[in-house]
Image (cartoon, rainbow, N blue to C red; front, side):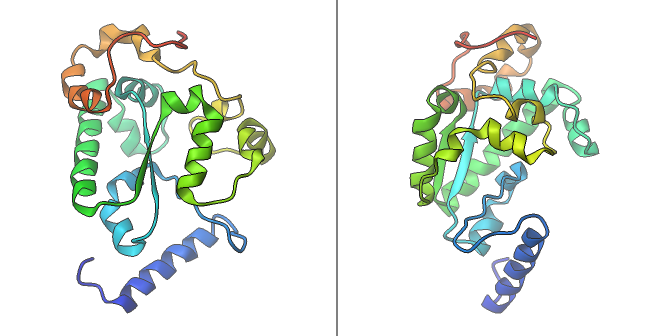
Length: 209
């Protein structure tokens, strides 16, 4: 996209907003949060089209990410194939964040890393930091996400059964209950475990099911 003219970039942006309008009606002054997780692979495009866009990067213990994805029933064939076993998932995770890190080092986007474990432990404080980062006015309603989710009635994400519950830390360290299955993937994930300061010790709040 480096060779596109300003007019061509305007056309691409217009197409994007056209697709947005098919999903959500933004009111004047509202900000759009594009939550597509595959955006992590699109940082060069995002920086080219929306150079001033702030970026939220959600970080979670890699092993808990592996377990969560492995236990989901994804409808998309590509995701179903990707989640067929933990080694395949681990290699995909490593490649994804290696790519992200290399692109962020070059492009220097305005990124806020939000740590999942801290977020669920101190929900209001972390949410306020997110609002400050995005430079949007505070709204007390964000402190009741379960209520908002129930009002929507239809939620298409794989985590639909969890978003209608109050924020909790039950899934923190859940992977430890299945640790024997992670012996082959820990070496793959270790660079990112070390980078983010995650340990292999049990963490408070985990439940087995």
